[in-house]
Image 1 (cartoon, rainbow, N blue to C red):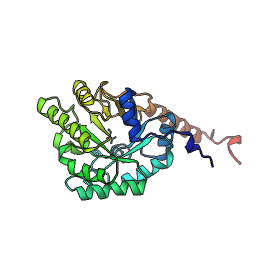
Image 2: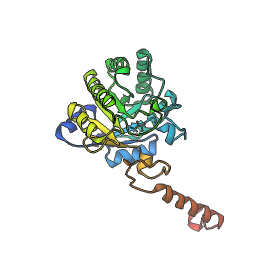
Image 3: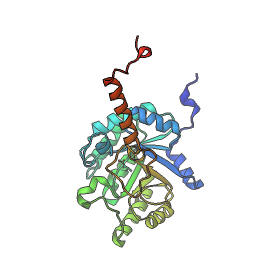
Image 4: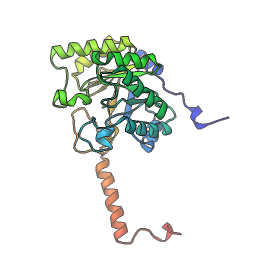
Length: 272
Ligand code: KIV
């Protein structure tokens, strides 16, 4: 029996640790739907993150806080149907794991059972250690997320660079160590000074994936809609735009509207 899926060597959490050992950088992007996930997976990405940034990008919320577990499961299952090769990480949304490890385990189990995702990501360090341990004990791989953790935006007050001061930098380093010791397979570091991010990456054996964390880490992640230039309002220094799809898609939509209005579309060949 042959199937297209068998042509690919799947990326696992073990592959990622091996990549770090070999010094091979890890590429990660977000996806929330089938079509985008298929394109990204076929392009050869290592990890797709079904991020709770879906709350901003797909639903238009100001923060990541409103998205629900059911909505994350919907997005993740659409992504899972598309992929053949990469590892899929699914964010546990705000309010589904903080402060109650039993609830954290139930949430992670729902993600794995109902979406088919391969792993979950949680924001925070010491304060969520019990939840991380309990999820890991059920055999569910966990990715950590430190630095700027958008689910805590109302505590931080702004989206500026984190851990510039020594106290916060020390906590971040010890949180990264703790996540490694607990058994997380990787950790995302968001918007922290590159020197600190490099130190963290050098101090742990698990891959550190950066977003706005410089070039000393083991891999990079971007929000796909941002790197494609579909979003315009968000322009942080760390963001490299590979396309200006806001303009290009706008042009295509304007041409279509004009063709319909002018009766150019559909032409003879475009009808039955
Ligand atoms: O939700 C998300 O897209 C993320 C990335 C910014 C790392 O957590």
